[in-house]
Length: 255
Ligand code: ADP
Image (cartoon, rainbow, N blue to C red):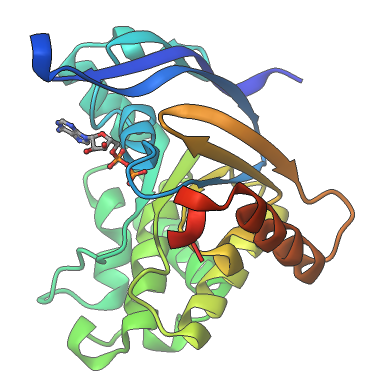
């Protein structure tokens, strides 16, 4: 099968001259349609830098990033903005909801500027809200719902356009464990049932255990890859914990 995302020899160098810092060193990997991939590594390893260059928020110094048929490393800013809007979804740690809009209006916001008709939009909002277990909250305002429910609203908004690729940066970072579990279970469901392709940066072994594959980064380089395979989520969680233990040293701040 053709990969949805191809990352080829990507480098990111910050600064100039003596102040140069090599944040990503020759990173290559592929992600297929329908995968749920976690990116883990110690603080400063380059996880956010990698996510930012993949998500078109920052550009790589060298290398190719191909999403579908498009080489985003070669695109100009204006093209990138269109590409991002049409193909990518984002779930961040802080939810970025608009307080003056209801949950429903927040979710459909990305479609408001598109040509999709109202009936189709409403059907889509109901489908996504049901998947995230927030259908009963659609007419409430952000101040009337919990942090976990806000995050599931933000995740619904990220998915309403049916993005090719979803980027999540520490999406459970601000959530209590019950809300984190609800979000992660919804993400898994979307991955399995709607074939959503998700790339998630996380420090948290529990969150990572919901992924099907984990890519570890150390000092700007890929250090290891782990697949869940036929293991249960709990077994995978244990395997991730063991791996973090073995990596030791700089990895202690992950768990
Ligand atoms: P992580 O997300 O794994 O904690 P980052 O991608 O944020 O790591 O950072 C990787 C390295 O790049 C760190 O050493 C960080 O200090 C450095 N870095 C990140 N952003 C910049 C920047 N804008 N300018 C210079 N160095 C940066």
